[in-house]
Image (cartoon, rainbow, N blue to C red; front, top):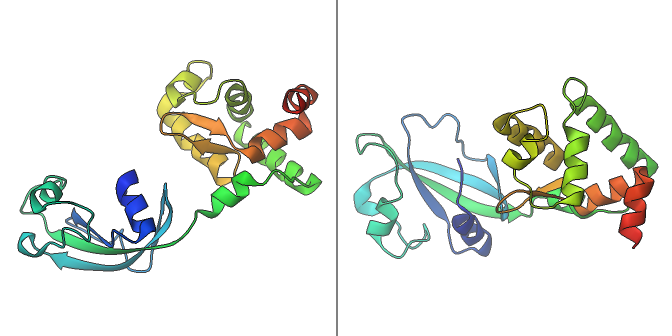
Length: 196
């Protein structure tokens, strides 16, 4: 389940407490599970059958019933579900990404991750250097210089984000402070750039 940026921020602010979706199968969405969103971690508290006549429009973050209904995808014959949502805190990857005080163990861990990622196809380290030079590059732009296609690269960059090395932008990616600290600690040229 994906929440739009506006709805995710609404959940974080406490203004949005439910979402509606049409699904034939809800096995992938369970009460107690969590979602990573742009606004942090959102918990799914409940998943209940719903009907179009009893939508909680304001709790879903919409100004009118018509506006909410226009966002529902799928055939009307597909069951409608109300998902009760609650913000439980910031994404822990953000705290990791913001940490620039790297120990030698942190540096070794990141190096190990990059070496594993680059074992078959060299893309991870070149991606870090390109983002250091040009923040905001998209997967399509990065893929032009790498032996990997855009869609595969997008999936792989998520691994860098998991380790707090990169951050997603509305369009493209950038190195996180942790990513910059790693390059500064392992590459004299990058260290010189950071200090000037």
